[in-house]
Image (cartoon, rainbow, N blue to C red; front, side, top):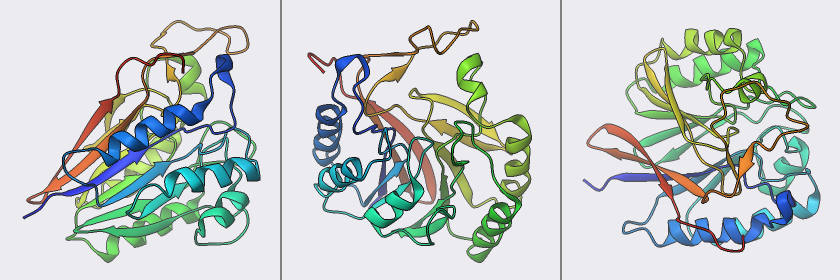
Length: 261
């Protein structure tokens, strides 16, 4: 049976100008790399921060670039995104500033999208209604392999500044209480951290993937975000989630050295 392939991109930050580098050419490289894979993907999911400033122009650019994929593209907001504008640009379910929570079919794999954002804040959180929704949705198809994608990955990194703007331990515990009831959920994947990191939650693998823009530095000493650089020009990347014979694996691809952005 043909494997099901889901590509995951994250943290595009279109409209940014960090270190004078335009994020668009880097995203274009990632899109070309996904399209050039030996086996075509069945769908793409973008786990937040499509925009750096939440502007209409950045979402127009995101739609234009992501339209280069000839498969379904599923998106969700990050802490830099504007929910309402993202929702309008990509025709997402729900209304206005409501959380963007939905499911989609990717062959035999079920994609579950959970919005971990708190408007106006960098750290993520879930309201009780979202967790009840997640519990119900996972309960609808208990025998179908599923992947949960959100912006803030439920893992600690040991990097103080990143952990401060990610999910608090109490939020991870609340999510774990739901996840633990649904063994068909095979992996939880996020972005936000601009680096590859892995852990586990309720016995499920948790993965954060690289950005298509800049990557986070592995600096484990407390610093001040305002005065230190926490990103570098390491290569952009993406993840590939592969369902084959009922088993799900996740792999990270980096694109090699970048010259001139």
